[in-house]
Structure formats: structure tokens, C-alpha cells
Image (cartoon, rainbow, N blue to C red):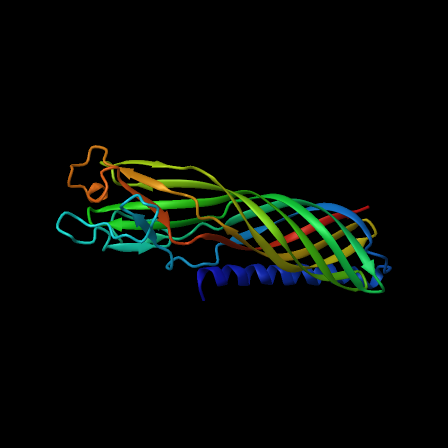
Length: 282
């Protein structure tokens, strides 16, 4: 099993245990309507599901906005023939990489549910939260040097619809809607000769979907578990490499003396997460 699948399996086991505990008092509860507003929060763990081997770094040597160029040395060789990895650099050459960083996520939420008939519920929920998930990609040059682009999902928000069925005081639901995230970008390199600038942080927009189970412990309080997948369009980050103190034969300035632009090949920041939830119902 992969690193991500192992973590998701562990989280799923924890969720199953919580769901079992939530079901214990069900027999003692009196079934009531889910109609009304609620507020609360969630906390859990998020992972980057894309794996650590697929992404690369793309180059625009002519600074014409077209990526996919090969950075070549004065002798015509590929300056990045050493390769890429979907993680952080463990050294100046491609002798190993550190993986992406998974981490804790939390959010606060507020919403409204409306019960239709005896057991169908629809609703709308808004959330604002924080995440610590990081996604990195590294290019290795033959110099040798490493060039790592890192993005971190920090502030994030979503507005989702949800719909599901009730079984006594337990609601099983699906949810989906629009999402926003503040992406914190960072660039690091072992190249001390060239000069580097970047265009900073991004606002990324996309979608979020998932499902969950919510159990009403009392008329005014419920607990649950929830799975979410978030996909944000993130393709704006650029790193400009200029000459700096490098010689005139430097590969980054052979095509255009003003330098070369970097970008990552993956244009979406995807996360999967599992949380425990708690809500106060009014």
C-alpha cells in the first residue's frame, strides 16, 4: 500500500470506531426533525493524494509565455537530464526526495437543514478553516543543484449543499460545492550563482465534495465523521531565474539574456481529508 492509502485506511478505521460509538445511544433517543440552523466545527487530517512521483517542473527559456522548453547547456546537453521528483530535495542530485507533507486541518461551520417528509434532509453549509498540507516538486540540474517549488494550503473556505437520509437520529449524507484557498508559495534552491524572483502567493478556486455521518446525541447537539476531497485550480506561481553572478554561458540566459521562467506541471492542488465533527443545533 502507498503512504497515502495507509493513512486514509488508518483514518477510516478511526472513523468507523467513532461511528460505532455514536450509534450506541441511538436506541435511547427520540427521533425528531432535522429542520433548523446549526453551527460547530471539525478537526481531522489531510493528505495529498497525487503521489510523489508524477509531477515535474516546466521551463520557458524564451520568456514568451510558452512552457515546455528544454534548458540546454552551451554544448547543447539537457541541463536537467538528472530529472525531477514530486517532493522536496534530499540532496543536490536526484539521490532521493522527501515526500509531500500531510497534516492537521480544522474548520468552523454554520448551516441550515430542512427535513422533507419522514427521512429526507437537504441543507446548505458554509465553512472557514486552516490546513497544513504541503505539496512540493523538485528539479535537479547537472550543475549539480536542486530547485524546489512548494505550495501550502493555508486559509480555506467552502459553501456546499448537502442531502441525505435519516435513520432514527443518524443522518447519512453527501455534500458538494465551491471552494477557495489561499496558497502560500515558496521557492528554495542550492544554486547560489543565479538570481531568483517569484510572484508570491495565490488565491485558488475549485470544488469540494464528500460525505459523512452525523448522529444527534440530543436535541441540541450532534457529532459525526466526514470525508472531503478538495480540488483547487492553482497554476499562477512563477519563478524567474536571472543571471546574477553566473557567467554569460549560464544555461538560463542562453536563449534570452533576461533569464528563464519556472512553473510546476501540475495545475491543481488536491487534498483528501477525514474529520470528526460537532454541531450545536438551534
